[in-house]
Image (tube, rainbow, N blue to C red):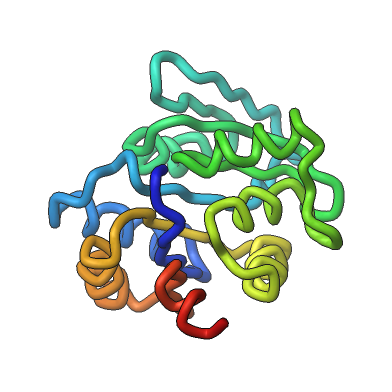
Amino acid sequence: MSENNSVVAVYDTHTGAEEGVRELQRAGVDMRTLSIIAKDTHADEHVTGYYNTGDRMKLWGRNGAIWGGFWGLLFGSAFFAIPGLGPILMAGPIVALIVGALEGAVLVGGVSAVGAGLYGMGIPKNSVIDYETDIKADRFLLMVNGSASELAKAKEIIESTRPARVTLHSQQMARASV
């Protein structure tokens, strides 16, 4: 990820997030620019398996078929148990940022490793805290990173899938407000 510009959509349901991913894919958005984060709310109820072969996530268990439907479209994946958030599934470029935060102990005061990864994407701390709250509430975060023009297109596509909310975070906006 060379640019700290992103669109973040919050979905209340898995099907909404999946629709967002599929519409972005249909529109030709580079799947390597997409990230998704969600809580694995049923990890403690059933045996859940996770592995990564190549760049594709494999998952089985209670929700394996559901997750596999769109997680397999995204590149890079991880499953972490994060204090304060619980079991978290994630895929896309956000994984490297979160792993980097965990390995380097680069955490932003008052947020989790997920929050540090989001902050590393250029998302302001106040929004990071809101997104962590969304994850705790079992919502799904879908993120797209890229140039301002790429994100304008992605935001329009995402808005057509009716997320709970969608926000554009850009370096240009941040510089303009300073």
